[in-house]
Each structure stands twice: as structure tokens, then as C-alpha cells.
Amino acid sequence: MFSIKTYMGRRAQLREKINDGIILLLGNGEASYNYHANTYRFRQDSTFLYYFGLQHEDLVGVLDAESGEEIIFGDDYSLDSAIWMGNKPTIKQMASEVGIEITRPLNQLFALVSDAIAKGRRIHFLPQYRAANLLLLQNLTGIQTTFLSNYVSEELITAVVSMREIKSAEEIKQIEEACEIGYLMHTHAMKCCRPGITERDIAGAIEGIALSKGSGVSFHSIVTQHGEILHNHNHDGVLESGRLLLVDAGAETTMNYCSDFTRTFPVNGKFTTIQRDIYQVAQKAYEESIAKVAPGVAFKDIHLHAAKLVAQGLKDLGFMKGNVEDAVAHGAHALFFPTGLGHQMGLDVHDMEGLGERFVGYDHTVERSGQFGLAYLRMAKKLQPGHVMTVEPGIYFIPILIEKWFREGINHDFINFDKVKTMLDFGGIRIEDDVLVTENGHRILAENRIPFTVEAIESIMIK
Image (tube, rainbow, N blue to C red; front, side, top):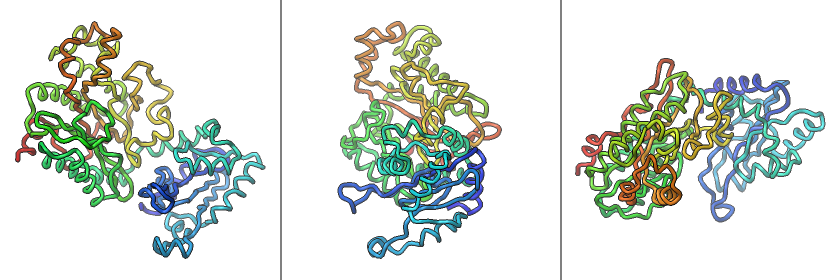
């Protein structure tokens, strides 16, 4: 945990941002894998962690925005639980470590909320992503789970996002620790990659590193020769000479701060001519995008710059044609680059997106586009010092999308389909790093940078 001062300060600041009522911040419980006692690895809710720092299941924090009272609701371990799980500190002992004096059993939460409702006080709560917490809120408030989203507090969402998106020095240190684990994961993947082994061999090896150095992976690792499948979680492929392997993986620290990197490299350690050519288009977009990261710059503008670089590079290689500015305006580049350029990162690998992307990546200055590709941009607003962003342009040859656009005559003025159709088994390329926005520009959050140039990748992969 951070210091008691950190958590007390965060909660005080949150209370100041909320005008009235009570704030409910729900922690997570255990989630069963296939029977009650066999659970997934416990992962505390990130917002609960941010304000309370307690790694314990079935806790609820209540902040009174008017009186300033703070309470942790939760139950101490029973004797049976202690026999199986070990004797843990009491809820009161844990709460005192983060500056909270009042604790109560979880069942007393119902009386507190009922009393607040009876007095006409506002009940502030955040969007929920776990069924157990949706049911808890239903029981507390009387609002059916189907309708709870209509009563989520936008005031609370806005307050939480405004705080969590600006990372403190101690948070940045944690993210850098996660990045160092990510470096070990990705360089190991490069070194052990060779024809004949399976994607699972590499996925298992790098996820073992994440567990040995921290709390495990920050998301389900993508280790695939089918890089055109953007979130491919299948690890069954046998590595083949001449193919590209895309590895998108990150780690969590023991305090659950995250990293997220992607590298793409040749299975046999040597890029073919066409792989090198396309890779260097993606590399140019990656390097120039990072160079543009600075306070006051709209991330949407950096994304569009990357899109133009991808379009120009693919035009130079004969895959696209026509005026590049017009091609990007029509969204033609999205055949190859249908994703957004990146997302915020911190306690969540896609930081705070569970609270609603429109609050995290958008604001009153910019609205989400409805255009294919650009609509997937998770972060569009202006950057501020303290933002931590992923920057991850890519180039993908997606057969089902290529066939659809060709069949329906989409953007034929800008795409050379005859040449594109020769690349249906190419796969995809993505390059991704984690970048801190500083007062004067940016800093890549990695003491040791994972190799990303053709030459550096081939050098580390030489057997």
C-alpha cells in the first residue's frame, strides 16, 4: 500500500468534489471458477483500491459528502475461513492502516442506505461490471439491476476520473515497475521464439515471468501468428518459419498497477522483404506518434496523424492509392488500421474504461465519431501532464474485412484490392509502448526499452 496520508488525501479530495449525499464504493468479492470454493485469482476493484488500498474481499467503503464520516463495511474471517485461508487482520485493523476509524459488519450497510434514502439523500455509486455487486446494489437501493445504469452518479464518475487519470509520482513508479516486468516478458518471448514450438509455449513462459515478478498479467496475453485478429486469445498455433508472431502482453505489480506492450517479430528471426517494408511503415507511425505526445495536444489529432502515415506508407508500397488526406477523411486507412491509437493506463490496463469511455476519453470538446475505425478511438481529448497513454499503431490484413469492402465497393478509389488480396495470409503488425505525458512533453515509461527496430529485433533473436 501507499502511505496512510495518500489514501486519506484522496478520499478528502473526492468528498470535496461531491456536493451532497453518500458515496458508495464497492470492493470485489471472490468469483468462482467452476465450483464455489475454487475461485479465480482475487482482483480488487481498481477504484476501491485507489481510495482505500485494501486487498480484501467483500468490502464496501462509504463516504459522507456532508459530514465527512468514512466507514468500511465488511466481515472478519470466521474460524472456518481462517482454517482454510489463514488468520487475517480484522477489518478494523486493516481500515486503521488507511486512516479509517469506523468499521461495521457488512449487513449494517443496508440500514445506513435505507436511512439515507428515507431522508431523501443522494446515493452516489459507479457503474458495476460484476453480477454480485449489481445484485448488492439492487438489494441496497431497491432498483432492479436492469435499471441501475439509469441511476449511476455522473457527478461521481467525473470526480473519480479527474483524480485517477492524473498519476502521482508514486503511481508512476508503480507503472514503471510493471513496465520493467513487461520488458522481461517481451525480450524473453523474442529469445525463445523459433519454428516448431507453440504459441502456448511462449504465452506460458511470459505469464510465468509476470507471476514471478508481480501479481500476474494485466490482461489475457495475446501471442499469435494471426495478428490480424486484434484480440486473439487462442494459443494453439505451432510457430512456422516465414510467419510473424505478435505478442501483446503486460504485467501487474503487487499493487495492481499495469503495463501493456506489443511487439511483432519474425518467427525465424529474420524479416522477409515485404514484412520489413510493412513493419517500417508501422514503426514510422509509432515513432512519430510518440514524438507528438505533449500537454494540450488532442490525442485524436495524433491518431489521425498516425492514420495518414499508415496510408502514405501503404500507398508507397502499392496497397493504397489516391490523395492521402482524402483517403483518411473517407476512413480508407481503416481497412488496415481499424483500431484507435491507444488508451489511458494505470490501475486498469484500459484505465477507468469501466466507468464509461465517454467520461474517460472524451469530454465537452470532442465527441466520438461514427466512422468505422475512428469510432474505436478510446481516447480523443487533450492530453494533460500525468496522463499515461499507450501508443499502439498497427497494420492488419483482415481477410473478412477485405472481402467485405471489395464486395460492397467500399473505398475502391483509395485501395488497390488486386494487390491487397495477395496478402490475405500476412497477419498483422502492432508496436506499442507506454508513455507518460510530462509538463514539457513526454517520457517513455521503461528504463529498459523493448527492442522495436528491425535491426534490434533481429539482433536479439539471433540464436
